[in-house]
Image 1 (cartoon, rainbow, N blue to C red):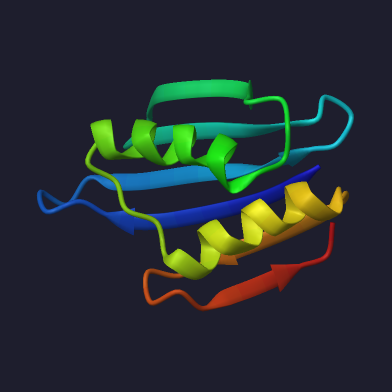
Image 2: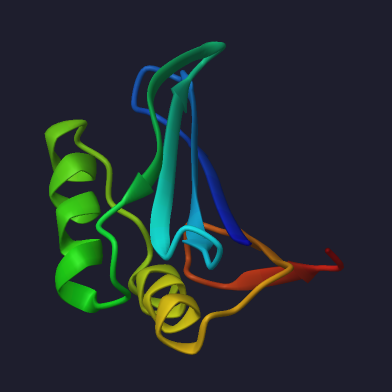
Length: 103
């Protein structure tokens, strides 16, 4: 499974954490959103095929919560699905840079 996490603060100072990625065993994406200590959305598999169109469903969901992810993060998550990536962890910063971690 690939895991991409993005942490930032909302305008009121509330911590915001988004975790998403690809699950090769289930052939789908996962998405979790937490505001402060509260998980507001958690769906382990979205879609069912690796494509930008399927991930677009997740972006629409993020939009409903008023969340924007760095474009480079979105592109890499989609590529994980297309390449069937497993055992990958990446921490993203608001400026779109990434810190890769060992899985």
